[in-house]
Length: 256
Image (cartoon, rainbow, N blue to C red; front, side):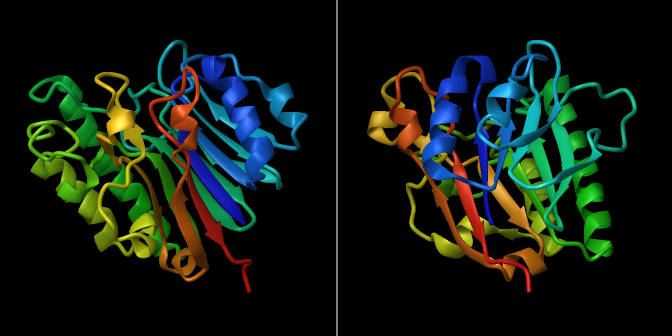
């Protein structure tokens, strides 16, 4: 089973890119982030053979999970804060795997309520991931984490010093997910530096490969046992009017 994640930075703007990518890559599941609107092109994905579950809001945020298989919506609200109305979370069951689609808050500028919200959201996610591990389920928690886990995950660590994606509190919470037993799928297969999933639109960042890796698959042990590969597809970043993120693709062997 092939599962991909992709922050599309507006599904309305990038719909043709996504459709063309699906036609050439034929993944089983595509988890999208940053839809930026409540209107979703269900019919266009149905025509390609995909069912869809969506959690969206006007103008900002939004996540969607597309699947060629039956998809069961489990939860679209991250527990722990009844006042949180941002559409950043969608937990679905597909082929026996809990596919948790997240768009974790950016958190900048640091020192404001935005960073407090990021840390609180990450703590709530930890609690959710902990409960899934206690239930001993096949789980992957994937999407745009807005976390640069290590210095090698950005082109120039000095440039990112003080950013919400690299602060010690942020990285500590990310590591807490790994301490629960979740595995960073990409790093299992790729140890080289300068492999990124995001490049800013400014200063020729993509052409210079001045990027960062912030789009991640964290998988439970039983899912990790089924992993065959995890790759970043950088090609869509070179298209006209691209998203600033690119897809990451995880391939799993069939369950025993």
